[in-house]
Length: 187
Image (cartoon, rainbow, N blue to C red; front, side):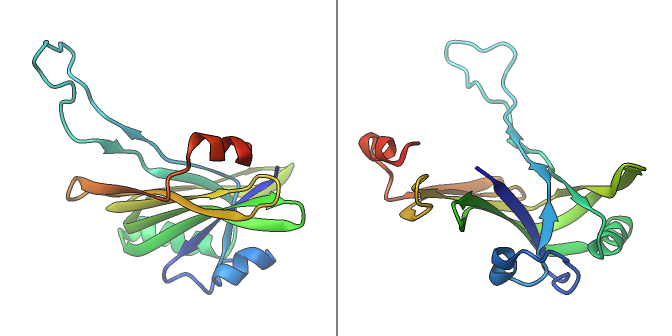
């Protein structure tokens, strides 16, 4: 099953060079990314007592990291990193290929973004790459449950919103799937 991922950056809509028909239907300026990731950790107490709490502080949201080919956005992203310019929103959309259909099933929306690293590298054998990292004030993660055979969305969405600055958030699951429905979907 092929998966494609794209970044959409507020203020850089004219610079993304993706020619993907389904990615550009969502919005102009799609930027193809090849590798991506983020994470979260929660510190815990070294010596937990029977009555003490296990956690010791705030969750630590790691920077979002991705790799992409050099394109017109590289200069703008490097400049944003050097100048400390805030970016209102960066959205990562992940599409799953099912037959001839491409379905967006994961969306990550980052707000109050700062580019923390922009590294260009290459070798003689392939196109130069850009590794990008950014921190964010808030994240909204949405996962749309899809039928793996047809790609059709089931209407079920698992999501969370976390505001790193306020250290609070919300978790929602619209129409949570029952275990037997999950088995029918092949999940």
